[in-house]
Length: 216
Ligand SMILES: [Zn+2]
Image (cartoon, rainbow, N blue to C red; front, top):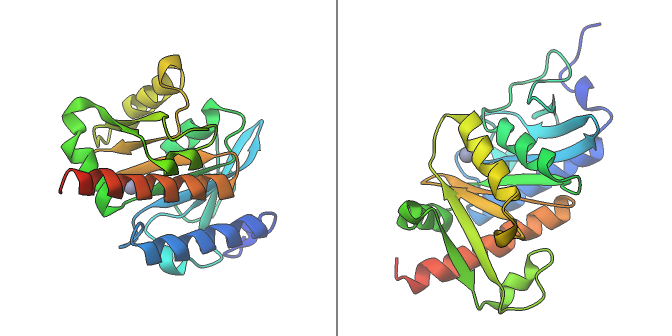
């Protein structure tokens, strides 16, 4: 059978449209410019399968065929699909750690990038005292302290994946809602795409507050 451009996506049209909308929104907000970023939705957990944006696409104008279905090893599940980026591994790792992760979003914002460098040598930073922290899943009070880990921006994806796995298993820093890669960008997730999008919005709001407070 010869695959046409979008035949690998006919079972997930709703998810495709939701991710295209995320792309338009994040592009307008300046969080996904210059073909940066990637977004995924978990299609199934057992076995793990994700729908993720194809590599190198303009996120402000994602086409209906600009998506790839990948398995729990970040490999395409259907032949003839466009390529996904090396960052696909990190989506798979985040989705594999918790059965209630339904979507993973990766963005490249100015404030997140500045903070990731400023606090990079500390391995992360705390955010506390902001009402907007209550937008993170499970946070009930603005007195909450949220740790945002920062990992070096390495091409060594297996090492990075191990760091992320360790963080998921570190009970003292729960809840773990996202991390920064140094001079690169944010990864966050949620039980569905709405929750993951909310987490991007909340983190970006908080990043700007923290960065402006430090008078960047
Ligand atoms: Zn990236």
